[in-house]
Image (cartoon, rainbow, N blue to C red; front, side, top):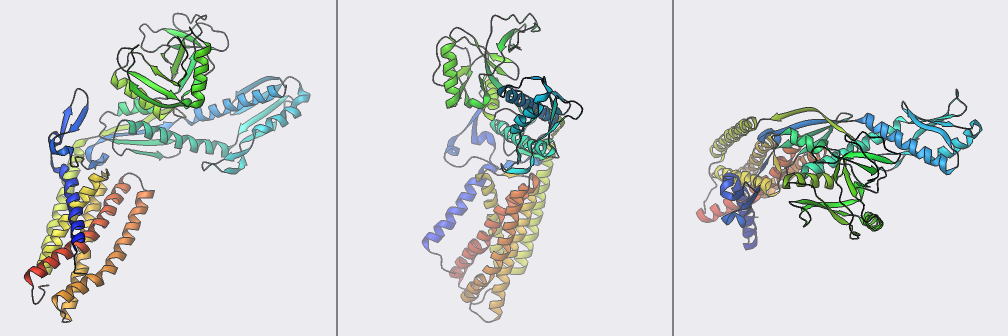
Length: 550
């Protein structure tokens, strides 16, 4: 217990050195650590910081300020889309059975099927029952309830009514919220922000908190964009009219062309040849046919095959790429494109091209999001909280130092030294792991200081008991650390489990508290049981006291 081999000493030295190196950047100004190119918006480590860690602790929304936005998911739109899809499926099913309906329409919250021949209603009803099935839960397992409520209209012998069951709509709502959160997270992460909070709030809202984002409108524009991408052939035989309001034949749709003054319009075939679901990746690049940056894209295997067929069979025609009901580019097909990749050009800057790349890579939102609450948290408030946290830590440190030195003398000095190393290791751990420090996280650090001192108190009281029983200094020191180890591990393991549960199940401030508490538990055990013991052993070997001053 009192023997420290060469490799053990080296390991202790490496751990402490790593903690110092990872915590050091937090005390050095950013312009000293990085060469910042404001024009290009880039930064590179300079000098020695190219070879040692240069990242600092990330500050949460409550410390550095940022944007807080609550979005409401349009569940009416989700229900309407579900009914329209059901109507299309019902229409196709009856057509396959050669049962031509008079109409299939969405009326209220039902799909109403009207048959030309009333005697075919039973046959049509049995055919439409093929569309029904058990509700698929969020976990992907079949539920007990049915998807649709199908019934023959008792007041009309030629009508069938189909409604979406409450269980089916709840499952759809859950999937919509989860998919929306996933898409939002991809988009926000594409900005390079640190540890945003994206969580469900209530039945139909999503909370977005982005530390460091001073312009909530930028987040709203990025998150709220639908990003529904589709590919269509242009029909130049149809005149869209000067304002895009001309009557067009069935199967044709008029869209405005982006970045045109005055606004121009094109008529395209309504049928979507490809959608954003076929897109595998997008990136900012350049192309000799365009001036400035363009957006390169790559399609999956199925999309590449379809894209190759389209460009092979439609040479000379324009091919429109539509994003959120607006044509962003409509190049002419000059030759087959068989590689499944292409570019989207149209006067982009690097910022606008990067924004489009983020949207395309994140995918389309399943429903419209409307911001219903937004505000900016001032960074000055965060600075006040940081200063308050620093003051609390310093007061706590001062009280602990006085108590430990008065109560345990030279061993109290060992404890205080280990405590300082403990804080350095916590700071280095937060920096090295890229974790975020929040105001509750500061509370976690203060709690960790108390827990670290508690471990030393257990050890020193054990040593004091051994001294009172007449043991030699070496034996008393060894017995004190050995007998206190079990109690220290029991207390810290149970607390670490609690911190892990808080981190897994909590969100925002709760996770911030759990992070610092969990890291602090590990470092406090190391400093209290390993580092302080090393200091005590070195002192014992150097001074060889006949009695321990404790």
